[in-house]
Image (cartoon, rainbow, N blue to C red; front, side, top):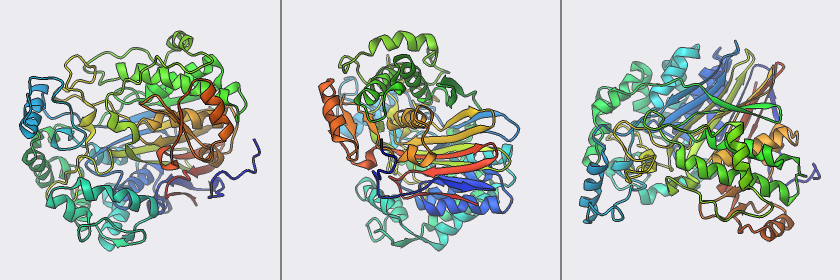
Length: 542
């Protein structure tokens, strides 16, 4: 491949910094993180400040009504994970949800084929983890509290900011999704989504953030905000109560990992889909996918086939481990057996096994931070699909997630709905150790694109030794629920034809369908970062 070929219009370079680097999908949010670093905060502080700012400047993809996760390596060498992900309400049984949906749609609730889990609405709202996740991150690892870390977000919400291009396009979804006055008044302007460059304020969200800054995360899980969330969901036919919210706690699970071509890659364990990425890397290693020339159809073919079997397994077995055991999908022995399914032509006998088709192209924000102390953080925050359920809690400005749409109403399904159970979760921050003092926080946003993006970015960095920015710029591919293999328009047309001859059903999709990656690296004390050319954001250092 000619390294001078510019496949995209950005011509960006990898960013370097002395004291800290931040990479994310909106420049004002990156600036919030840098501001905190300049004031003496560390990477964890910057992660929370950046995430909070994204709630305001990219409200189309994240919010206080969603969940947040982290993978990190601390300055003293600790590798860990944070999971702030709520479960289904205590009264959200299959029977109750079926009855609620049947009443709305006037169908037979006893007919399993007639009532399915919806993609939006009150029944899809699970307990949001974001506020407690931010607070737990700051309390355990940060230098500052939420009163300091939320200042940039509050300033953007109350004083206003101009809407950027990709986000303006995504905001139009709200015009059709929002049915209640609470939602339309909070996020539409004279009934319409904002235009590119339009200066907007989100005063209701700003007031909620000010309350959180003053009172801590309890402001969301107890008191007026909790009551507003429960009331909004119940009024729309759902089952959330204030008790469901007050019972929520943050978890610190052990990451799962595998070694790929000398690099140790860390992911979140179930209920997240991190095992899909790890299994795919292991299968790809078994079949030698990364040994082919970068511009060869064989490279894409074997990586895509590895993802097929990983999705097949992940979507059949990954669930909340408190409710059902998950097999060792990331083990070498498992990969060796599953690699036997990969051949020289496309395997059309592998089904995707999707727990929720809504996650094919879900919306998320991911940010990465590294500081000069040696902290490296991958932080991911989402409501699932865009503005989530379509509900906004009273006058709070908090849009509620639709993560519960990943549940199944089939009592035999591993991801069947059960009270308190956490749904199959697409969000997966990433962490990779290249060497003893060479760590990177990374991730790729976008529903089921996430593990596929993880595999491609890791391979670009490890197999093909690309610089950070180029590893994100290169054209991507994705295996789709429908069985098609999608390529970006920038991909070599000859590769598409050759993949078709291998039995793949090839199609072209726009760049916005291939996720949004960020990466921040600390290598022997040198900090660097890169950002996704398919988003509005930037990488920034100081």
